[in-house]
Length: 277
Image (tube, rainbow, N blue to C red; front, side):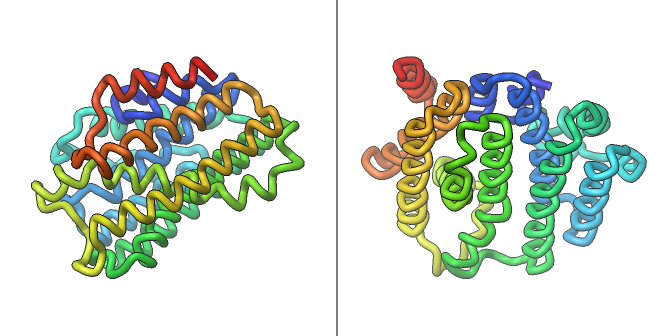
């Protein structure tokens, strides 16, 4: 499972192993289950109706812990990323692993994944670019803000010391996920633009992305402050602090250096800063 994580993730492949067990295994599995949905949504060789049907089948499989509805999935040869091909081939084994997750957390994963898929389906129906900032923010909520909510629910379930701050953490959780999604968009902006894979209308500028990400990062910083104040378990703090540090560095690069990609030195600096904490 962690091999698949390495093949399909950039920052999460580093930050998820920082979490304590058993939540580390559960978050890694949840990430991969969400990534399957992302891959289906992005797969351009299928039309929107096919992708919508596959998303429905995927949610049913997660809900029932059965591969019956996804056994017929076959041709992913058009996917360019070899890691995503491996992920789709491993979908059945992911469902099998889900059976070993305790029922409350299994239901939690299904609940939030179903919410994400409903949002994806809504945008597949539109089959168009995001028309304005509010529509882009809505999309970011469904594909990333919901993930922030799920992770926060898992953290507060695992670390009972966070329960007094649960309401405040859940209020900020969507921004935590949104900030990572927006920074990913910023990091990929140049290459997506070159490949004509930008889905923004003319009413959304690159500066809009920077502004939205900056605003979300402020909420993420507040989220981190609460984790420190309530003395969350070190692994939970490290996971969130690493993701924040890496996103903040990418955002600074975009604003001041005029480029969007992170290199190995950025990851090394982020890792060293977490070790110092």
